[in-house]
Image (cartoon, rainbow, N blue to C red; front, side, top):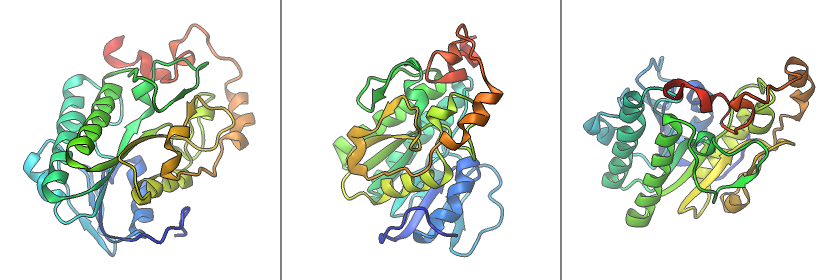
Length: 273
């Protein structure tokens, strides 16, 4: 498979958590080209190990298991956890306890770079008629967004105290193509997803940096200027899909909070109904 982002830096062993999820399955073969050994982990079926892969099923809330999972890895791409709005108890174990376990294991084993899959839902209660940058105060739109805000704060703490670098990726909507008019702004193509993750892994100095995960869309609510030092240069765009999307969804319901706020349907999902 050809790479969307050529880079001379190669890792001895990378860890990919959430490898059986939607984006994990996309990144798994792409990250393998960046390392000698790719260690993949999830609680779902990981299938058979490809050449150069290590399969390590693990629950993130299992502190000892996560500690063993990070032994011997050069860097981590952390996609694992609950990725939708759910009751708080479910979010708590995987996304809060699990992320804390991961960072503490990184400290113990001397892992110095983590790419953390945060989410645009950290700022989901900003309006769609606003443009914000990565310095804007968080405004989570649910328990999921709250958990990702916690992960970003954890990343900042582990940088300030232990000098573990993190790039927190506030991923928008990463699918083969945008599904609705909201995604014309939030869409992240798969090749750009790879470019983003590779930039986050290989940028020389990041401290704790936050980057919105979006392609070079004509319409956007997010300004990545404060993160230009990471070196992410998107090349995909939602614009070729605009006509088809607008034909499917010609009118927006202005009384629907999902059409008002950047978080879309997450602002009216689950425990807040």
